[in-house]
Length: 284
Image (cartoon, rainbow, N blue to C red; front, top):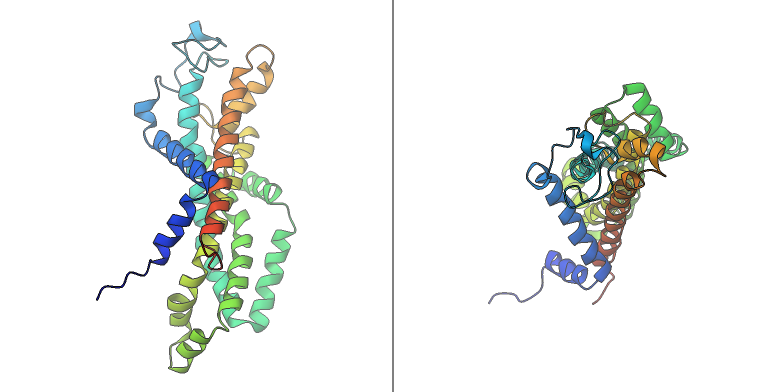
């Protein structure tokens, strides 16, 4: 007889759909991802092509978001800028997960002197504000989008190290872990097969929220000239160019700034919804 019990993944998805904010965030994030992936088809103009007839031109039907200081179409640059921002957010957080999870697993499971050493190094990195550390690393590595991703990923790694360690310490004393250890499972198998799957929901929520922070960090680095380099479009570099024309052409700053606000808010709404949906104590 087939079991009618609802799977954990389906139950979590059902809970997520009950949260309007999370659903809105998911839809907006999906829309931005599609726009970024299809930027070459969606954008009406080449984002680097100058049109002197559209020099700081106000929004029109031909240029819905107006023109920038070189006559480039702001809408096209916002669309292609989404690609840089989302890539920076996802890749940098992926790097932080790749580095942070193994170190956190080792620290939390091994304990002792090794745990103390790892945590002191992690605390030292966490003592430096995230954005300040990212700026310092990006300045050291050199200005480029790739180096900005590395800098953001390294700066976010301590958060995942500490979170993974805390989750491992809570899970490794559970009865099923003791049973797995008692029947002779090696530590690596216990960590990968029994501990990691049970701490993954918390890491997924943190990753979603960290993507929002990474997008802001990438925009900040590009604003300072340490991220995406001109003439390639980036929301941060667009804001940097727009700061000199706020009175003559405010649309140059409004649209990239609004894009950053909307996508960061959407990731935060999605992360909050995932936190509630993946909470095993939730009963609805």
